Image (cartoon, rainbow, N blue to C red; front, side, top):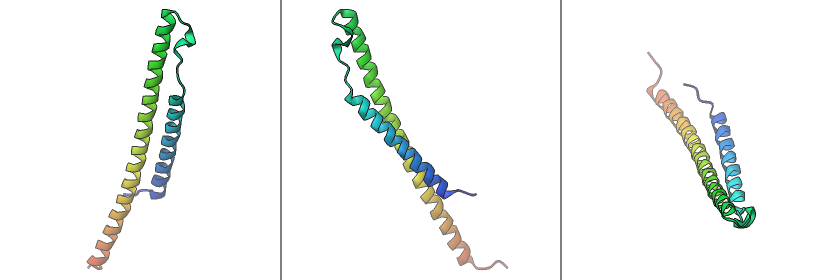
Length: 102
């Protein structure tokens, strides 16, 4: 089996960067507030503002979850790359210890 370890690390780095960008977007969006009076002061405007505020909160939550997912994937790729290298090194040591084939 062949595994391109540098590419795995590159992919993990890019995935981690994407997670950081999504997290920054979530933070920026969370800092924006929905003003209840932005649509006016009558009941339909209040309902619209409440729905927008709910959608806003959901979007922030979804972005945070997406960021966490990307960070998790990045960590798993790094762990797997390390495990593959370790397994390859152990196999190499086992081959060297077993000596030449007869």
